[in-house]
Amino acid sequence: MKQKFNIITSTCVPLPLENVDTDQIIPARFLKATDKEGFGDNLFRDWRYDKNGEPISDFVLNDPTYSGCILVTGKNFGSGSSREHAAWAIAGYGFRVVISSFFADIHKNNELNNFVLPVVVSEDFLKELFASISQNPKTEVEVDLPNQKVTNKETGRTEVFEINGYKKHCLVNGLDDIDFLVQNQAKTEEWERTNKIEG
View 1: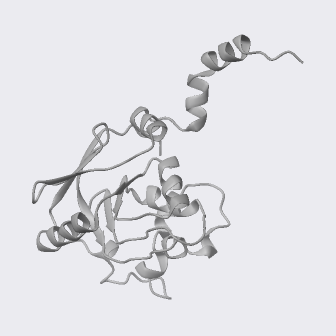
View 2 (view 1 turned 180 degrees about the horizontal axis):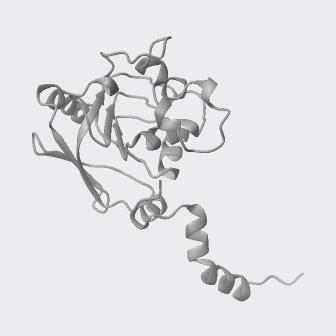
């Protein structure tokens, strides 16, 4: 799942629902696994499939009208349980960006830790984006991480988004927390030598 993140331009999958919690993203019965592989198959499982395991045709992930690596969703995405598996499922499905007007903090960090970029936009920008996708499912969005800008290419409207500087560095360079520590091992050891506190 580690991928360097620069500028992504893609069509979008719209999920115009608010308060989507982590149990809806990945139901609890799938949490026994400790390996990240395969979780994308069960993303939004109870919305995607009926009790017989058949696809529910009117759910957006089963609608061939919509595709792309950007999920656009309503306010308060990822609330509820802090399970990291929800971010595993989003990344495993192939989404690289999730756009919303508000994310639950823990889920937001879990997405960042799994190389998915949560982009927070204004309610007005989100509403316009949903409208653009509804009118033209081929609407593209450009997400420019280095400049922290998101653009609805259908209307030309751009907003700046915030991101923690450390997490931005890791995404741009394709590093997880351990990679970052290994990359800076020499600096850490030098700091320890020069700041050694005598007992």
